Length: 287
Length: 135
Image (cartoon, rainbow over all chains, first blue to last red; front, top):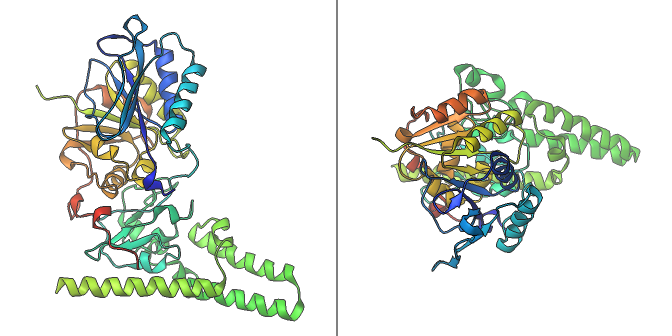
């Protein structure tokens, strides 16, 4: 199931009129349990404001007066509202209740996918299409106005920030990356001047990154055919990949999972063609 | 009197980039404060799903968001088709600021918008509804 098709459920911790506030420990435990399980939570008291309701289904929990929760219902849009009295329930029981709500709502299991995908800073992006041209996994595309966008974020390789390094404007962020400016920290002039941010891994490696992979692989293949030494070929490939990994901070497992050199070449050509078409179309629509 | 800012807390549940002690201390202070607030398990995950709840959270009125870097938060929301209003949004960065500072800012009742200003408006960001089919 695509990420965008997954349903969600919001938990409301209700402590307003008609309910008794929870104890501090019980409340904190409940909030933590719900968040760790991947749910959005609204804590509603008589103070402060929260966002209005939307079409997300709700599970409203609280210590309701006389232990009687209000009746729930189903909205015209199919969203549901359920109430549950949790007075006196221990942390384990509340966690079970949340797990039950998950299975009934079809909400995704937390941690099944680390949310790792590029986020474009359009204050900086110049629509140069370097990222579209570079990415082999079809993460990028263009919108109807020929503007770059992230189209398939679940295709992105976890922990791989390589496309952000080919961006000449440091416009591509991975919010869960360890360091700035890729993590969203302010971009300094120094960052832009830094060779690793400037243009590309290919520059660092003295040539096109895919050509390098192909060359290395060909050499390894030729050696393999001469020597029939699978171990040596593997070592060669690993050496190449280690260098790439260090230069671009690309996880080794991402590099190891790259397709065959022929497939890389095919995808790289395809990506470049898409970028070229988008640039031409964008140029045409500007004139 | 102006309506107080809504509070949105991000638990960044799917990564270890926000120090655990900071996010737990901020959540604890919010939990003990008696005020209403919203909490998201992970704003990145919601943005990846284009969760319509982000539109609700971006919503109307002022909002204080305890999460990570303002630049990242701004464009995460924009990418999900829920642009934040720069004049009505304050992002508190739990990756860099101590929990006490974040909690004090949330409790102070003062509001200082701090989204990075940029060339185009967030509405200029492409949205899924405008997407062209991948070739």
